[in-house]
Image (cartoon, rainbow, N blue to C red; front, side, top):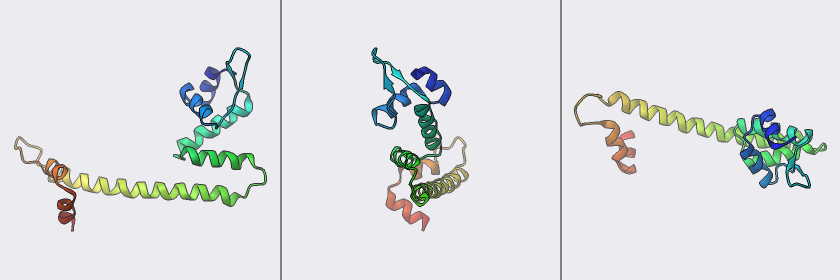
Length: 137
């Protein structure tokens, strides 16, 4: 299969597939003409990578997960460790987003949204970090 076929079958852009090749995640064969030739194994790896990336795993996580996937003597604890670390990053991001939502919701509620120039949203954005910390205490 050529890169266009693989892109269609995996749903990954050709540019992403080339990038994965450049960083060593996949290694398609090269014909005498220099064109990439993907087999079922590369197709499967790319689908694996696409799914892992859609779950937010980093490139390095994906590298580790692929290595573990290919290692039939792996311990599932190693896989779980990578997933658990990623889940902790997701939880931290959710906390950050929840706080951002709380703050922005409060500011939107406080803004009159009328023709007057006074705007709590702009005031908050313009305030230095120390001023914001004092207001939230």
